[in-house]
Amino acid sequence: MKKKLLIISTLIATQLFAKTIDFETMDQNPTRVAPNSNNEILSFNSSIKNSVDSIVNISAKKHVDTNIDSLPLQQMFNDPLFKKFFGEQFGGGNQFKQNRVQRSLGSGVIISKDGYIVTNNHVIENADEITVTIGDDTTEYNGKLIGRDADSDMAVLKIETNKTLTPIKIGDSNTLQVGDVIFAIGNPFGIGSTVTQGIISALNKNKVGINRYENYIQTDASINPGNSGGALVDSRGALIGINTAIISKSGGNNGIGFAIPVDMVKDVVTKLVADGKVTRGYLGVVIGDVDNELLKVYKRKEGALVLDISADTPAAKGGLKRGDLIYAINGKNIKDRTALQNTIASFKPDEKVSLQVERDNKDINISIVLGDRTSSLAEIPVDSSITVLGGLKLSAIDAETQKQFRLPSEISGILISDVEPKSKAEKSGFQAGDVIIQIEEIEIKNFANIEVALKKYNNKYKRVYVNRYGQTILFVIQ
Image 1 (tube, helix red, strand yellow):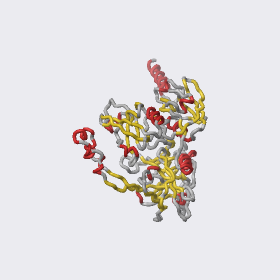
Image 2 (cartoon, one colour):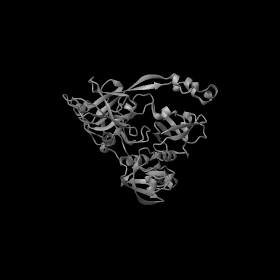
Image 3 (cartoon, helix red, strand yellow):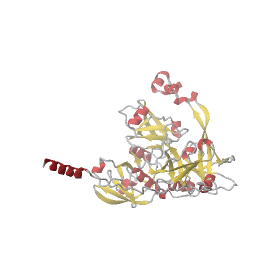
Image 4 (cartoon, helix red, strand yellow):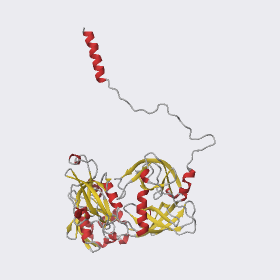
């Protein structure tokens, strides 16, 4: 009897715990196909050879006034404590300046028969002279800058030539899929036209921290120094993106490259050719993403969260409130703060848009007429960096920037993380590591304060107070 009970108990236990997984399997005996017969070679040459002819090499030359501010000796001379005891004769570094020529190489893509070329802004930024060669032809052309947009890292050049140019065919970045075979074409290390192959590794990559407006195509095709501004094409040879950057600790290719999608390229290029600049719509909000904690108080898992609203902006006039979750614009879903930035930027100033907003667990529609983002800091992500005031790159102060610039823990304001060379800001005396604490009578605690000050004193000379090594310094800049 005990033996029977034991067997029954074992059977019951086996039935209770012996769960099976119903794996969804593919055909276990797939057919393997040879890529070619004895007199055939698998090649994409006929598909991409015209695209290769559309690639140019760009050489940018700029004269740089180099002082030894970056050297330990001059850093000591510029230290306020040193100046206090030894005087200003050691300050400013003018006696340590020397002029040198800085050269950079990059790539570009011919987009029209009459000589328009698209490249990255960082390839030609601050260049005094731009030289263009086509493919492996050594004939040099003067590259005229038509317009550039630092926020998207795009620029348009134009060359004049009697030769027949080969504009690249344009694809559609909205139809791309992960796994698509692609080719990166450019001029790595200045050695001439080069083609590398890979696949699309990911789409809609943002928060990479390279540009203000990010919606990258990620690829494992080799993108090396000099490839910037070159073409990313599909297996038909159609342009799907402009190669922009890599993630690398060594400076070499690690299989993580990024390209600006061609739909964004077309939008920016059209504006640059028409106006020489890019105008974008704006709301006037500081925005963040929805995290796990916020999911407890919002119905939706995606959207852009309004953290702050600047006074006298389209957002304020339209009735947006702090805490609103923008989940769609004109019916198009907004996944996160980056999607909101890019979508708003795609509209022109004075366009009317309809925002779908979650407020207090209720869905509402808000109609807003967009403003002009020129000289505005609207749609600022809480951890972004921006460039204003004649060449200052500003960043929020966090643990990383405190450590990088050796800032005291109690300091508040907006950090100057970089100063553009030869800019008005540099000539005025601003330095990386300065913290803006006040503009005129407006105390600076966040980006919204910066925006209010710049709007109030737009195109006017204004007093800017910064904290440098614990001392308050005053600058005047327009």
